[in-house]
Image 1 (cartoon, helix red, strand yellow):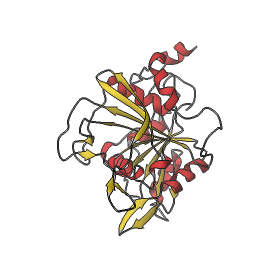
Image 2: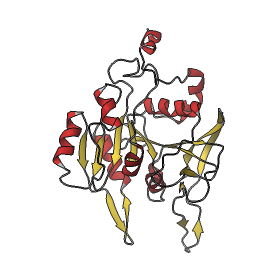
Image 3: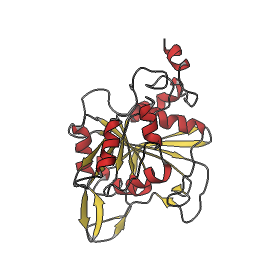
Image 4: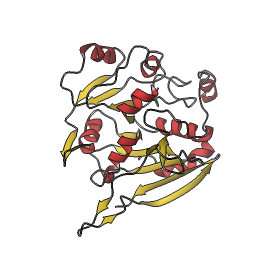
Length: 282
């Protein structure tokens, strides 16, 4: 039966064999209710980076880093989470689909939308100018993905955009998610994650972009991360790229100390890439 479902998958369906899934299992969301944070979703931070910690050549430039095996792994990870979260900059730059293309998952040979995650877009000022032809909504109409939930600080997002989202099964969620610290804005990740849990989303995969990743890795937020899965590609992008580099911490005497460190680290060769799995050291 599984083979028959997979044979009905669209041409862009991906394969990720069971033998490649074994090493990921210890780093994925729990299968039961035994969670250390019952009021928050299991949160996985995952992204692809170059040897110089860059996500992209420059802001707004879509840059492919992962090889074919790593790309399939990312889609498998999506199938194991209830939601995928990105920032509005990534939504504007990439016109992403934010669905799972593993053969056998809902819309790709599976029934209904089972296995398809809910896209979450952090858009504080409601600036994402999506349309009927945005890839994420096209996929929702074709039954190959879900429409996004857009988290914003705007009390009344544009009515036409709200109606378009709701017709596809998505919605705006208005939250006060920005706090001010020394004149700069930072994201209140606890508020966002509590909201997702209240929406019935028990696991979330944070994919990017750079400002979202660096914000989540700040000292005030990084303890919310349950698992880190990073694909490292054998390339240098060079200076001027979008870099993963969170703010440093300071000790009681004001001296700079490393921003963070992983523990329980495992490294897995995957094609020409290397996949790193670990947890934030607290």
